[in-house]
Amino acid sequence: MSPQLHTWVYGFFQHRFDQMMRGDGFRPIVFLPHALWLAMFFVAALLASATMLRRTDGVERVRWLAATLYLAGVLVLSKSLASQLYALAFTPFLLFSGSRTQIRVALLLAVVATCYPVLRNAGLVPVDMILEKARAIDPTRASSLGFRLNNENLLLDRAWEKPLFGWGTFGRNLVYDPETGRLLTIPDGRWIIVFGTFGWVGYIAEMGLLALPVLLAARAGRVAGQRVALHWIAPAVLILTVNMIDMLLNATLVPFTWMLAGAVLGSCERARAARRNKRRGLRTGRTPVIGRKPKTERPIL
Image 1 (spheres, rainbow, N blue to C red):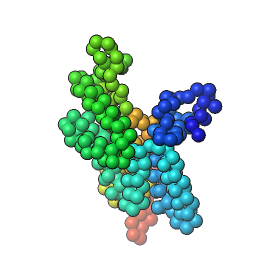
Image 2 (cartoon, helix red, strand yellow; image 1 turned 90 degrees about the vertical axis):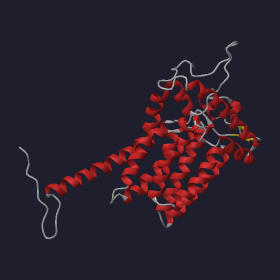
Image 3 (tube, rainbow, N blue to C red; image 1 turned 30 degrees about the vertical axis):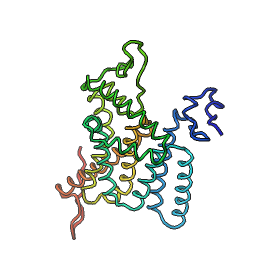
Image 4 (tube, rainbow, N blue to C red; image 1 turned 180 degrees about the vertical axis):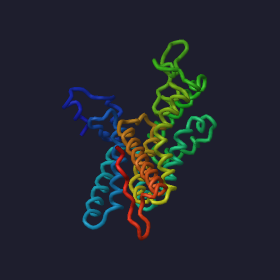
């Protein structure tokens, strides 16, 4: 069945129909702008379900196991190779690793995503090895990945001509044929779009803003007494950084990404406020000690 829901409900198809074709079938898109957005949504749902599977027991664990297997099956049907690789790599990692390890890995991924333009320009990204691995899995998808990487090389050379503030909008960050004016490049990754358009200032403003909750979560992980909170913060941080890594390949900066970053940031700020209030209480003697009742504060008139 081809993706027709958006056409039936709204009367038009929201993207190029040929990009929904994969192999002998189609990729689902439902009501999102692209099938890759839907695949990333299912990656986040699968990792969240795996977290609930680990943190529950009894009948609830059986239910979350069924939900996890169901979401894994739907993700396979989404026919997005990158999303399936994310699921294969991070679902077992969420099930069997500790919260602090998850945050450390998430911090590493956030640093890579933030510094990616430098790594890419310096040749530290093993592009040839990645293409060989992709070609061994699926030659068609490897060809698509090679097309993206070749476009990135052209766009990155263009972006480094104005690295601080970029070329601005109206397509000035793209590469055109000097004689015919024909467009020679098609940007796919969110990182190269932002870096070429707004330079380092815009790139750090966007990717750094997404990385900030990861840094705060890593800082909270070093504070004693935050273990229970980390059980829930760490998976959310990992899902956020997986989305950031996917933004190096696709333009998958979606509203869900900002919502997840805000949720992690709010949790870290709440934990920070609790620690601050606890320190103030210890300093002013408001917390109880052995054999003594806690002091009560006088109302301020």
